[in-house]
Length: 139
Image 1 (tube, one colour):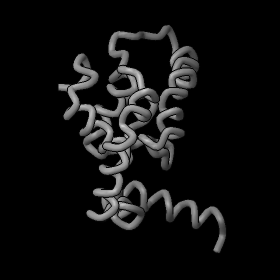
Image 2 (cartoon, rainbow, N blue to C red; image 1 turned 60 degrees about the vertical axis):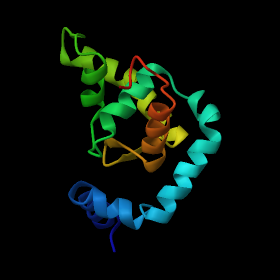
Image 3 (cartoon, helix red, strand yellow; image 1 turned 120 degrees about the vertical axis):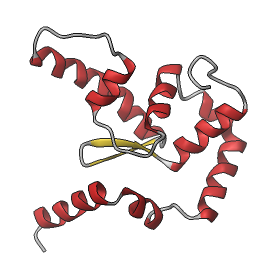
Image 4 (cartoon, rainbow, N blue to C red; image 1 turned 180 degrees about the vertical axis):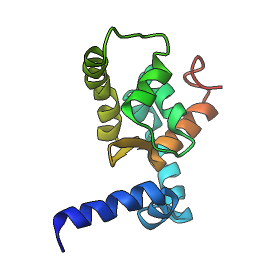
């Protein structure tokens, strides 16, 4: 099968059925419990990996939907304006490092040009709330 066709199928699967993808690739009750246990044991190490702005991005994504770089940027910096599209694109390229960092840490996943929270990211947020960390960001 042609690589372009395979990529199109994968892209369509990510867009059309994220919950199905999550179930197939790691969303079982058993794996959720393992992730929660891991986060509970390693919370202090994981906490050192994120800053309050990163936690804001995790919180924004915890609904489980995909978001573009621009959606995350406008959520984190709602009052930033640009003189033209070129300047906005340049800023978004610089801003995207934060999202890619969250992918590298395992808190986010990147698919079809958009980012979404992983089970690890959601478990970390739950533990942060339980421990009342990041009070200025989390309720």
